[in-house]
Image (cartoon, rainbow, N blue to C red; front, side, top):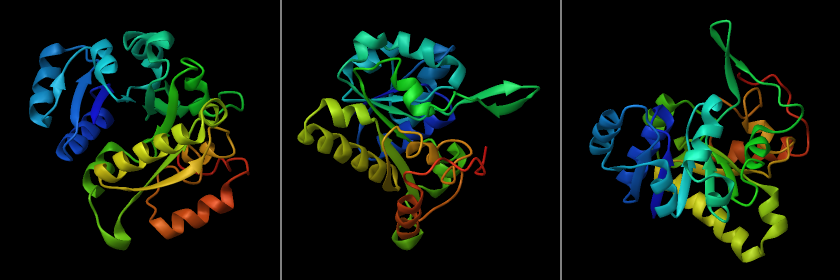
Amino acid sequence: MRIGIIGAGNIGGNLARLLAGAGHRVAVSFSRDPAALARLAEQLGATATTPAAAARDAEVIVLAVPWGVVDEALAAAGGAAGLAGRLVLDTTNQFERRDGALAVLDLGGVSASAYNARKAPRARWVKVFNTLTAGFQASSAGRTGPDRVVMFYAIDEAIDEATDATTDAATNDTVERLVNDAGFDPVRTGTFARDEVGHQEPKGDLYGEEFHHDGALELVAKLRGTPPSGRGRP
C-alpha cells in the first residue's frame, strides 16, 4: 500500500521503517530540516516529500507528530477539506510540556481521539500505534507465537454511523493488515467514545503496558463501556 506519514520523529520514523520493510511504499514528511528528512528516508527505504504530497498520494495517512503541532500538521496535509474521505491513522497522545516535564492534558471528558477527529470530521479516523514507546515498538516488533505484542486500535464511531458495513469492514481489515505487517497483534478497543478508546490513551489501563493476544481480548471486554480509571501510565 501507499503510506504517507506526517511526522518524521521517533514514532513516525519507526513506523516508516517497519512498513517499508514489509513491502509498503512509504513517504515521510513534516520536518524542519529537509536535508535530515532526505537522509532519514534513504536510511528507511522511504521517500521524502511534503505533507501535502504525502497525504495526496497515499492510500493511508499516518499522523505521527507531537500534540502541540497537530493543527499545523493537519493544515500542511490539506486540512479538513483535503482529508475528507481519507483514512487517517492517529498515533498522537495529549501531552504538553509543563514545568519541564510531560503532563497529560484534560480535554474535558472527550477522548483525545475524538478531539482530533473533529478537526477533519469527514476523514476516516483510526487511533493506533499510540500505546507503546517508539523504542519498545522497535525492539518488540516481529515477535511470534504467544510472545507477539498487541497493538490496540479504535475506529471513529462516525465511520460506523456514516458509512456502510462494507466500508467499515474494509477500514478494519486495512488497519489489522498494517498492524500485522508492522509486527504486532491487532486488538480493537472499540470506538472513539471515551469509555472505549480512552482505555488505550494516557492514564488508561491499556496504555504503556505490554499485552498479549488472549489477555488483551479479555481485558478489553472487561473495560469496554466503563470510564478510564486514570491509574494507567501517564
